[in-house]
Every structure is written in C-alpha cells, then in structure tokens.
Image (cartoon, rainbow over all chains, first blue to last red; front, side):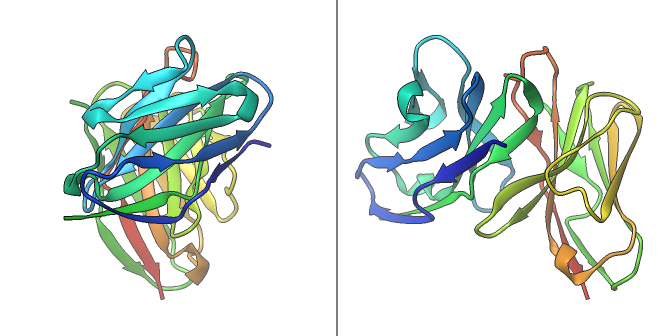
Length: 114
Length: 115
C-alpha cells in the first residue's frame, strides 16, 4: 500500500525566510504527485503537481517542488515566504495503476510571523 | 471556476442516527470523492466514484456508504453515527482524462459532531 510521510507537523518562520517542506512516499511504480494548500477558512486548493517531464515544477504563488525519484521525495520550496503563506500544506500521491485512490500526508501547519 | 458545494458547514447528530452528507459539483466531472480530515492524520479517503452509479472503497469505508444517482451529486451516508465519526468531511470532484493527473477540486467541508 502507498503511504505519504510529511516530515514536519508544524513550522514557524519569519517573513522573507525560505521554506522547505519534506514529503516522501512509499510506492515503487509510476506516481503522480501533488501539493495542496488550505488557507485559514478556505477550501483545499492545488499548489502544484508533477506527473512527468521536468522534475522541478512551479506552482502558484511562487512555490516550486522537486521530484527526486531515487529518494521517493517531492519537497516543496519557496525562497521567501510572506505572512499570507500561513496555511496547512498537504502532499498527496496517486499511483498510475490506481489513479482513483489518493494518499495524503498528515499535513504541515506553517505559521509565518511578520 | 469549478464549484463544489456541501449541504452543511456544521452538523450535530446523536449516536445511532442515520446521517446524510450531500455534495454537488457544477462542472460535469466524472469522478467524485469523500474524505475525512482529522488533525495529525491528514485526509483519508472514504469512498470515491468513477461515474454515476459506480463506487469504490477507499481506505476507511467502514461505517459509511455512498450513493451517486446523478453525475453532479455524491452522497455520504453514515448508517448509524458513532462518536468516532466526529470529524471534518471533505468532498472533491475531478475531471477524468484517464491518467490520474487531473486536479481535485474540494468543497468547503462539513464539520460533523456526533454526541
């Protein structure tokens, strides 16, 4: 069975600091990878996704993620965070052989202080 | 814009009651999903539906059933609510191009409390 592990449950950082959130998955086959974000009081929404091609993908609001197949990782980064990036971030995976079944990580709560 | 709506934002029910959670999407998406979201556990898939009248169990289907009689509507049913089903329930829909890469669009969630 697939599983998704997010390394940090809570991250607190100051505005302009760099952010990196770890995500590792356990599945040996072809996967599709996603990062979703949930801002306070809002719906979950897609930040970015990877399914093939360039392993460095860019998403909305200046976020990017790098797929490293050998490490089964899909880490999310942002060079300089803003207060408005305060949110909960979820990594998700689905396998090409079972594309209906998504596995989500436990989430990382990010708080950006002014 | 895709819109996914859920019938209630907050719901309080008693143990043993039958509970219906409704989800409607307006973009003619084939796939629909029900998740529950709990702190520290992320989102866990309860059921999903490929298309009308088609359903498949997710990772935690016990105590739940679903119904999809029309393409735009996907209902989650708690046959006999229990306190351990107190949670946030999220519905999502997705266009199906067949490769699993399509974005899921989420509703606002229903916070269910079972007393």
